[in-house]
Amino acid sequence: MAALLKSLVGASEKSARIAQLCRQEEALFQLLIEEKTGADKNKKFVQDFKTLADVLIQEVIKHDFPELHGHICGEESNKFENKTLVVQVCATQRDTASLLFRILDQNQPAAELLAAAIHQEVVLQDPALDTVALAIPPERLAIWIDPIDSTNQYIRGQASVAPIGGICPSGLRSALVLIGAYDRGSGDPVLGVINEPFFREDPLTHRYLPLAPGPAPGLGGSAGAPAAGPCWGTPHGSGH
Image 1 (cartoon, rainbow, N blue to C red):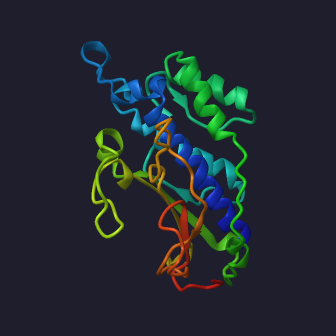
Image 2 (tube, rainbow, N blue to C red; image 1 turned 90 degrees about the vertical axis):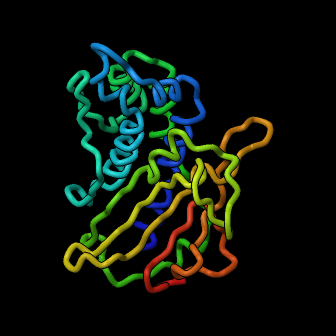
Image 3 (cartoon, rainbow, N blue to C red; image 1 turned 180 degrees about the vertical axis):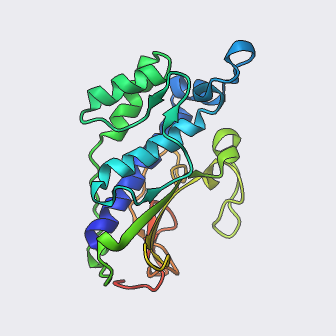
């Protein structure tokens, strides 16, 4: 179970990077906010570019967990109607970039940025992840993904919204990556990861920085765990 949780946390970090890129890289953000009119108004990839970020995150997790094939659920179809292309993570970064190049209407910089994020190696240094021990074998689990929760805030929210009680009620920082694992038989939640891609901004570069992961308070973690991250936990606190 520790291996599964570490993989989910790693996948959440890739997902956060994709979400960050779609907001802070000019080549991607212009697609995110652009609205086509006339003959182009029904092009799904431009009209709702947030969908691509969602789908990429879902496909990253499917690619990283082949043993859970058929048991990873999300809200978005991975078929883009503009060119009848199916979004997927390819065997190599180059092949993934080539596919995204076609989906993104030959936007090479955007395709290469996203492909690099998808194929990055994530190194985790949280020793608490190795202590998780649950009795449920991974083959009994399924995964539910909400790739970018709080869509409107992700697209239009400002980073300057002040937190209340440590929680941002709105704004860009309220956009989260949510990944949960549950028992296929009972439907009971088993463990989950919450990643806050926009928690910390570098004041010089204005780019968003990762934080060290840690157990979430109230979910098997300690009161001193970091409030962002990603945070992770189990419903009953097993292994913490």
